Image (cartoon, rainbow, N blue to C red; front, side, top):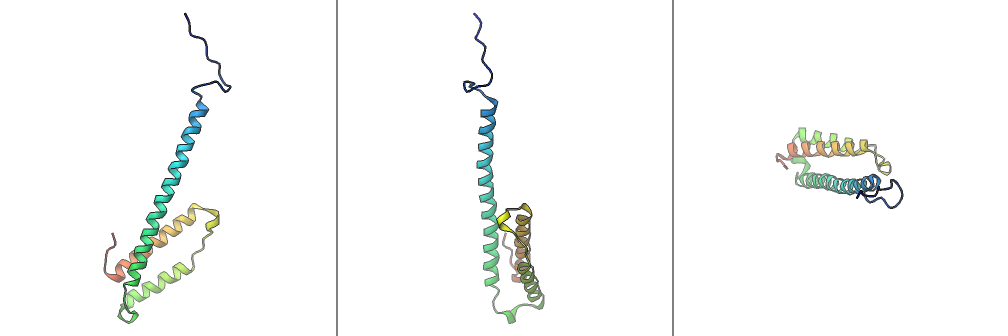
Length: 116
């Protein structure tokens, strides 16, 4: 006895490649959301650590000339940032990531500590 042939297409196809593709796309969407949340959490933690380190600097008159210069440079960098968050562009995320990295480097050097 031979097996009956499966009809291609239609709603009756059990192992439809389209169905598998849709499932994979749904999994990718889940992974995207999880990755974005983890990435944003990491950036927020780094920014929080930098903020705490800046708060621990102490009085301005106790900062070295170099540290004071770094603080002014960073303030200028942060003030001049040009972002369009509503567009959700990768280049804006890269700018934010870069700014936070610069902040961490200067804060570490200015405070004499390592945050990582």
